[in-house]
Length: 561
Image 1: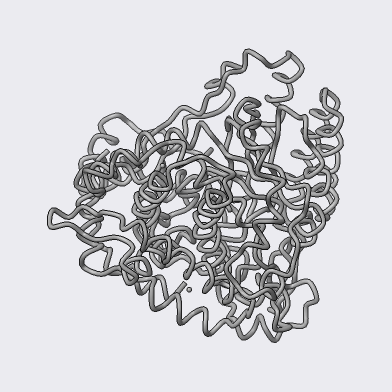
Image 2: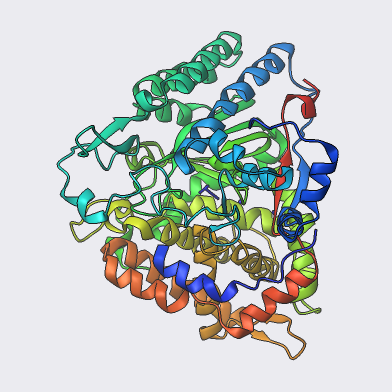
């Protein structure tokens, strides 16, 4: 989805290392310090580098208009933020391990801050390169698996629930692999979060939201999330919302099996949500119109899918690590999607911040001057919206008997799925225009889409979104979908881009449906690369001191609660 989407920058001296990483991966306790000690530390070359790294994130206050909320809802908001905040500690355990032990070994405040941003000592915007001296490479399986475990050992282990989204893999006293359910491993945080959700449910004015909160509390205690996912799909009239628990599998780059903990606390923008309602009824027709053989679109998307616009007021855990998502497409449970569809939540205030602070400045550096007028917020918003819609299209189970696409493609799944959603989102806009269902200028969407590719590539090879955008950039380049001008700016060839979008949509849908891991790996290996031309474009963007992403000043005090 998210997991999907944002001051001077580094000059990206390690861009050439992205390829190797691509294919290899395809509140702390602080000691009191005297002022003069801090001053001495911050003058070191390491600290200057930390200042540059932190500057890659533009700080944004995560605020929303609370004036329309009742007192009960404001009290609920406090409880929901407290519950989501507990996901921070759990995600630290999953991504790294003991947060306090890491913070004690870091002598300066800036490096500690950057560790907070990254939830560990590895730079998520620099392909997980360690930035704390003495820390080795990040394990591909993060902390979901023993660090000395090999893939072969995992495959041979006779553990029925080893591929479960909700188990950790550990060793027993004899060194044998065992599974530990999340509800056991994180019992304290889960129990506290569940109690807060139950307390919030007692204040709920919306009955559907009340049922969901109670069911989600049970899920945290039992690891059975499907009933709460079903109830989350049934909610239509709630103003407040919370996404909480183990959700996305991006952090597990070993197999892509393990879900990481996160939290979003949201307030619905009813006016913008009404603008989106008309698209939900079009999902079956959009599925039928996909440019692929009928067997790759034989599944029917759920008829109760929902589109909505929200203001986010709190991010936690996986959602808050490194680059921030700007939209949510959940649940991930394929059975829930087939029975009820999915909900697509556009995080409008976060999208606006990324558009203003990142996308517009990028377009001023990299987009042909005659086409910059086509970079528009509405196009950015709807490109993202249809990206989320596209997650529900295509096929969830392979046509070749290899089981779910998620398990067949293993560690490649997240990247391929993000690539599918991006390209199909733009394809769907073309279809809606062809059908006469929308009145829009396709040039706005294609130009904004190209600028967005440069934005997302900068997330690096450790990000599924970054890898997917590299593939799309090079495929478009091969097909002549854009041209590079002598001054280094890019101009879209609108006719050729439409052709390339349809062709790439067909390729990715087929790769997913076949579930052929090796063919998918070879395709991604061919296109997920950075050449000198792209490296030069990224250098120019970085030299313009454009932030790579955003970080939040957030919480109850920011909201005035």
